[in-house]
Amino acid sequence: MIESNHPRPQFERNHWRSLNGLWQFAFDKQQQWRDPEDVNFDLEIQVPFCPESELSGLHDTDYHPVVWYKKFLELNPEDFPDPGGRLLLHFEAVDYFARVWVNGQMLTEHRGGHTPFRADVTDVMEGKTTLEIVLQAEDDPLDLAKPRGKQDWLPEPHAIWYPRTTGIWQEVWLEKVPAVRISVIRWTPHIQNWEFGLDVVLEGELTTDLWLRVRLIDDDIVLADDRYAVLRDEISRRIAVTDPGIDDFRDHLLWHPHHPHLIKAVIELITLEEGRERVLDQVFSYTAMRSVSLTQNGFLLNGRPFYLRLVLDQGYWAESLMTAPTDAHLRRDVELTKQLGFNGVRKHQKLESQRYLFWCDVLGLVVWEEMPSPYRFNTLAIDRLVSEWMEVIKRDISHPCIVTWVPLNESWGVPDLPNNAAHRNYVRALYFLTRTLDPTRPVIGNDGWENVATDMIGIHDYSDNPDELFMRYGNFESASQVIARKRPGGRQLVLDNLEIGNHPVILSEFGGIAYSEGGGWGYSRAHSAENFLERYQKLLAAVSRCEGLAGFCYTQLTDTFQEENGLLYMDRTPKVDMQMLARATVNAVPILVASADTGTPTEKRDERFQGIEIFGP
Image 1 (cartoon, rainbow, N blue to C red):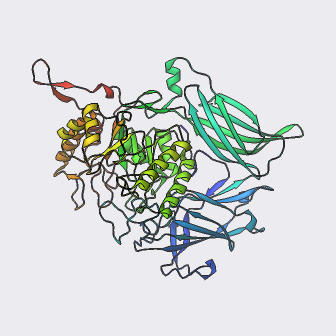
Image 2 (spheres, one colour):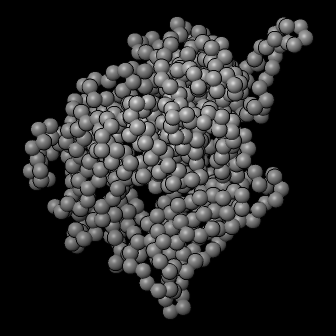
């Protein structure tokens, strides 16, 4: 197992440190300050928790159009870069538009609430041993043209929208880098030829006699040790590993949720000086051998049928909102998801931290990654979403856990798809843009309904009648009839004569059974713990028998504020016995069907689930 606590686990250098902790803070509700020197920093905040959260120490849920942060940082001796080197200040996510000043000079700005950016602070150090860091975050709470996901625009959370997140909400950290360095690493496995595609971008002034050395290590065995002459700042290579031949050995090298096998990588930039090698830069990474593909009716992982058992995961905590209280909480969410019998998650309207994706890689959980939506259709919203979506794909493309990209959900931001050609063309543009940036994974252009460009047809159907679900999706013909004629969510499922028969069908939202002692809501409600478990078992038994489906996504993993339709409470404690839930999830409870000979009930197990491990609580 690969262990790391780095905020960017697939691109790790030795010299870094976290800047999380206590910062000075100010609300600027009147938007009166333009210069850091004018700001009255009258509060303190615990970074990286947003001011709306309890763990920030503020817990102020009012509208906050502008906020300010300030930190005096005493530099350690190891922070100072080597001659010619640089010192970088990283922000993993700031919502929504950020400006950064260091030692009185504005160094950078960034638009987008979910993706990382950095500032090079080297030139403003001026021999000082301290840095004065100031960040301003603009986040108009009423702006519906920015990608905001589930963040509410009303004063209090309502319906399916939750408390807002303003300003810093992921890691802030400092990194020492050399003058000439590795800037980007992208891994692309090619399972057919047992090769890894490696794309590297270099930064800084290149000199002669530069080499890139790449080592792939499986446990303690070196699979590859390659060197490439550096002729330009972009390097693209294929790294071949020996085909193990026998299936047992081949399977050992493949990444799968039941066998999340990762291969360590060390990438070094080397120069030759007087006949001797000197390492200029060293980055630690990892990759995995796995492939994702589709058949007409199914989803394939590593070329083999893989039935998707997903759970919808909003990724909120009561005390810290979109930010996990600790890294252990992220790991625990992955473990709980697996313990409930699911092999994947659909991260809903949230771009999770790279630490979460790391734990999915390490522990074995497939991920559908979905872009948080804006709620208006105009040129500003288009520009914002496209720009940030491209940053998302660039950030996460090398994670083996990600198996599907979802740029839009339920026509949010494109509300008039059936009647507006511009809306439909936008969905097509996002679909083809995503497929262009990453041709190795399927893309769902608009999950839920009104599909115009997609590799899989995702359907949201919250019927609480198991028999009805089985009638709709029990076989390919019935599922095709539903897609062509029915409207489970009150919306058309396909538009513009999209060819139905060439796309696997996923029930990508269903269930939503509420059970709690509070006054929250769900799509249906159970009146007792026993009734909740019984209803879940019957729904899952029906769906798992549906031959017209390539998988499902149950709503949802945890209660989320006023939505009380989770399998777990919001504090992650189970509502009923987890082992019983897990058995229902993988259809381990025998299904009673009529015997062809006697007409009496008999036990039958779905062969798609044979050999699936049941995880205990």
